Amino acid sequence: MSGDDCIFCKMVADQIPVTKIYEDEIVLAFLDIGPISDGHTLVILKQHFEKLHECPPQLLGQLASCLIKIARAVASAMKPDGYNVLCNNGRAAGQLVGHLHFHIIPRNSGDGLFSRWPAYKYEEGKIGEIATRIRKNL
Ligand code: AMP
Ligand code: ZN
Image 1 (tube, rainbow, N blue to C red):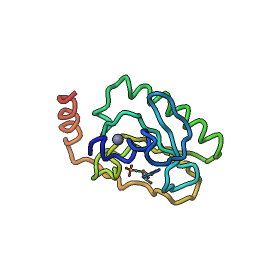
Image 2: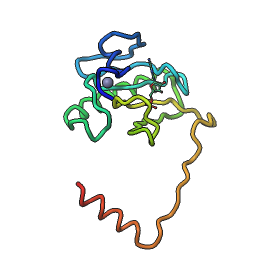
Image 3: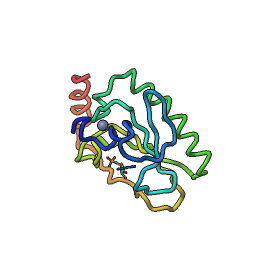
Image 4: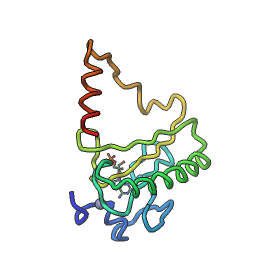
């Protein structure tokens, strides 16, 4: 998806309405229109990148600074027991909007939103093989 047909780019360009929480030259934060809890917020860069690893480190650093500020505000305002910060990358990972974004999702004990994920154990030797494979790509 390019910036031209991207719904988040259209928000940045003020072409579609959005409930803004924070805005500067680089970052926009707004309430998710389909929240899974009250205060569910999205934080984006104004520039269009699809996935985390496609984003220049310096810009991601600026986004991270804002993420802290927005997470603090959401936590102070909504007083949840906790919150998730979530970044889906690619369709297979649940990314529906192809413009890099971070969800801040307020959580309360027993809200049942996410149960524990299906963790498993590596077969003998596999953990080392996979670590080597990833390290070689750094
Ligand atoms: P993801 O599945 O990580 O790509 O999440 C995309 C999120 O964008 C979903 O939680 C949607 O509810 C949210 N979303 C889509 N369109 C809008 C919109 N116009 N305003 C606010 N949030 C939106
Ligand atoms: Zn975009």
